[in-house]
Image (cartoon, rainbow, N blue to C red; front, side, top):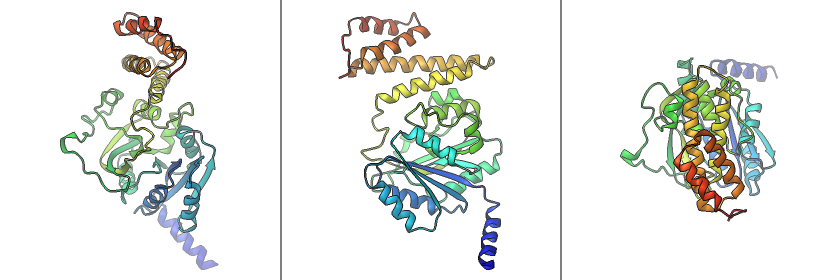
Length: 325
């Protein structure tokens, strides 16, 4: 018994120089991919990882596959099952459970390259002022085979070193949340994952880039799997609503800060633009009249003299769909 305790103490001492990293894996009906996902985490070259897996009410064999994986590994895994509520609430639970100094998410159909955790921790330890670092993704197909980038079509990193909200919304900065590693304290300070959202990443990215210092590691840290059931595939119409809500909530936050006048104006511009996009698509797909009217009122409130907004006002007057198609 003494030898076992002594060995455990030695292991704990050796881990002290490696900050604990909490990796949260939200999963829903990914029985085909979850095992490979978890293996990519347990195979990392970084020795101090807290792995938290949350099953968001899967109806396939995901639970069975996870339990089998846990039974066949010595890696300690915190596993929770719950009813289906969406990734936002799932990640909120994951953040509550996390005890690491650093925090990151891995979607259950994606993979981590072997040095993903260690490279991001190394960066954060060398840049103490950074609250979060984002990296690149590599595309893989459904079988996990790397999809070669298309040369000049590959997105650049940050065009400047400022990493501002304006750069982000102008597509001058790559901020893919799933590539990020944050100081856990920073995530909690901005309020964590807002449970009003079904998705987890849209609003939290805006909060981080506005209120925290964002950095970029110019190398791939996540293998993103392309397949037929990706949640964002085709950018579903409801995601427009989530983006609108993100800008509305962000505007409310920055309105309390008197010196952020320029930032408020940029957010208003983005909100107005998203409202018009919602109206354009909404009329096309046959969205409910009430939903369109609500967004139109908000758009006119921001720009009452806008020609486009008033065009949609006239269009709504002759719009008879009380329910969507």
